[in-house]
Image (cartoon, rainbow, N blue to C red; front, side, top):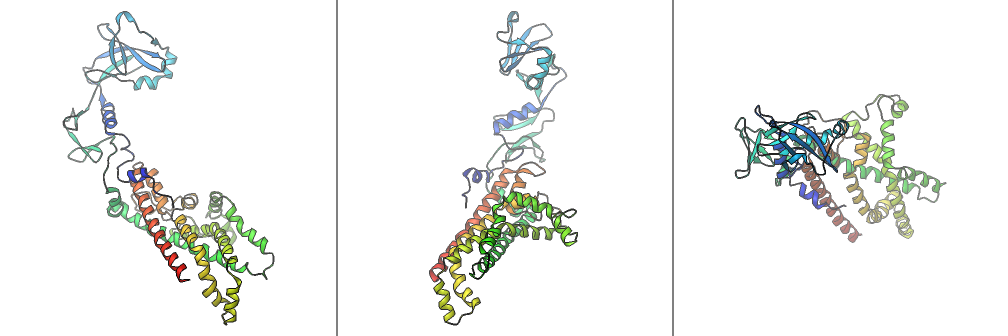
Length: 422
C-alpha cells in the first residue's frame, strides 16, 4: 500500500483549486490589474512599440510632445530621443508581439499606462483597490468593501472577488464530504459501491481461480500445461487494452455480446447492469492472477496430509474444507488483502470502461453510478462544473488511505491469528 504523499495530506486541509491557485500577494496583484478601467479624463499618449532582447517597451508621447520610455518598471523621460538599446518595431513585428505589448502595464501614480491600439495608449486606474492596513479591497466606484474570508475577498452580501488565494481551512473539506447536501448523497453511494466492488471482485476472482486451480491440480487431468497457459492469457494482455475491448463488446447498439445473445441490453448505461458489467470484466482480468497463486499454494501442501484425511474417512469435499483450504489461506490471505486494496483503488477499469457513467441524477458534483472513490476523486479534481477542486479531492484521497490502511491492518491481524491456530 502506497503511503499518502505529504503534499496531498497538506492540500487536504486547504481550499486549493480553481479560483484559489495563487498566493495572497499574487491574487491582490491580479485583482487590481483585472479591474483596471479608463476614466473619462485619462491621460492619452501616442505609442511606438519597442524591443530590447526579449523585452518589450513603449515610446510614449503626451499631448505636450514630451517623450517617455514606458517599461514594466515605470515611466522614464527620454532626453533627445535616446532609447539606449531599444529599437523600434516594424508593423509586422508589432503584430507578432501584440499579446506581449497589450499585456505590458507601465505603472504610474494614478494606475498604469496600457496600449489601446498598437499606436495609442491611455492611463488606466484600478476599480478595486487593496488597503494593506485594513486588509480589505474596496470598489472605488460603489464603495463596497470586501474582506478576506477563507481565501477570497467577500462583501457583506456574499459577493466575492476573483481570483482568491490558497489558504488552510482546517477540516472543512472532510466535513464537507459528510455534511454538504450536494456532496453527501453521491458520496455515500460511491462509498458503498466502492466496498461492494472491491469485496465482490476479490471473492469472484478468488473463487473462479481456486476452482480452476483445484480442477487442474488433479494428475488425471489431460493437457494441464496447455490449459494453464491458456488461462494466463487475460493476465498477460495489457489491462487498459482489454478494458477498451470489453467496452466495445458491451456496447448496446453494435456490441458483440448483444449480437451473440440476440439482446438489446444497456450494459454500460443502466445503473445496475453497468455494475454487473464492471464485475464481469474485472473477473476476466483478475481470475488468472488468483489461478496462478492458488496453483502455487496447492503444490506446496504436503500430499501426506490429504492421504491421512482420506484414511480417517474424510470425503474429498471434507478434506478440502478441513485441510486444503485452511492451509491455502495461510499462503494466499496476504495476497487477498493486497487484491482488495488494489481493487479499492482500481481506477483503470472504471475510467476506461465507463468513465463513471451513467451519471447520478440530481448530483451537484460529478458522480456516476459506476464511480468508485478513486474515480470520483479524479472527477472532483478535474471535471467539476465549477473547475478543479484539488483540496477536496486530496481530502477524499486521505480518507481512502485511512480506510484501506485500517482494513489491511485488521486483515493482517486476522491472518496472523489464523496462522497461529493452524
